[in-house]
Image 1 (tube, rainbow, N blue to C red):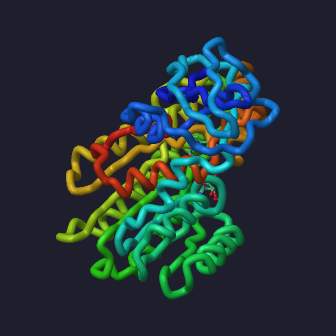
Image 2 (cartoon, rainbow, N blue to C red):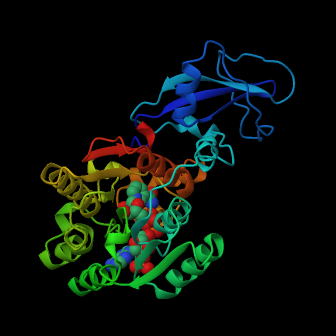
Length: 361
Ligand SMILES: NC(=O)c1ccc[n+]([C@@H]2O[C@H](COP(=O)([O-])OP(=O)(O)OC[C@H]3O[C@@H](n4cnc5c(N)ncnc54)[C@H](OP(=O)(O)O)[C@@H]3O)[C@@H](O)[C@H]2O)c1
């Protein structure tokens, strides 16, 4: 079985209502590690699924006050006990970040695959982090969804604060990449102090079949065209269009996955594409020391891609794991994962070219 929670620490939340187990943002845990006495925090009363009582249960003072103690490091195997997990509605990490006054400068920010899922959530979150008169470029194939997102962002931020542009493009095709780069060139780069490209668009590919069934090179090439070639050519086009200049920060993010590092049976296309992308961006980081390059694995997200994974994965164990993750509320919200990415970008002290995982932060 699979280790989606690699590097994550499980915590036990102890309350007068019993013991509940769940994920806690690691930042909070660290914060508590540094304290001599555990911090008490308010939580809503635990739900019916949170009555699991491990042997070392403590009883605390009355009311819903609880503390969180480190319990154990999750093993690389999928833990069936996590069905008892309890997830706070709003992650604490998100609260911390939304109060942060920092921004990403006056930026040209490009997000591919912005029409839905993670890209859409990132577009919202990033729009709040850009200085006035920044340009936000949303790229995908679905015009209607992009326009809808643009309207939502403009009504959130105000017309004057942010210039939101939609580029309808199929990044599997050369023309789609060229059209996107062309659209970006309309921006006056001298007015910007940050160019931020988020390579988020991707596809899962056919996960119903195993490696030895992919005898047709054209099928494989089509997959790699969006997921590898498209990402490289777009990144190269953006870096050429906005060359190194004093005072210009350039950041390229590759939305990666645990699959870049770990083989998943029946996911040969996806794993290959993600591994290739990670290496591509590591090479870029070596070649262009002024460009800040990050491969960020966002964790298992509750999106259409996950739905496909649950429905179509050819490997039975894998399919079951995805189904349990869904039914046991193990999937992350795009916002929760996006918050960590934005914190990384705001801190801007990651080693360029690094692969960083949601669960390791
Ligand atoms: N979901 C997860 O559990 C998970 C886990 C780890 C990593 N990731 C990564 O996170 C990123 C976002 O995934 P997601 O779950 O949000 O996926 P999703 O819901 O399937 O969304 C994919 C996005 O990519 C766009 N896209 C797909 N094909 C395209 C093409 N040919 N040209 C241009 N845009 C295209 C889609 O828009 P259109 O259809 O409108 O073009 C959509 O906006 C991906 O890189 C994925 O590999 C996801």
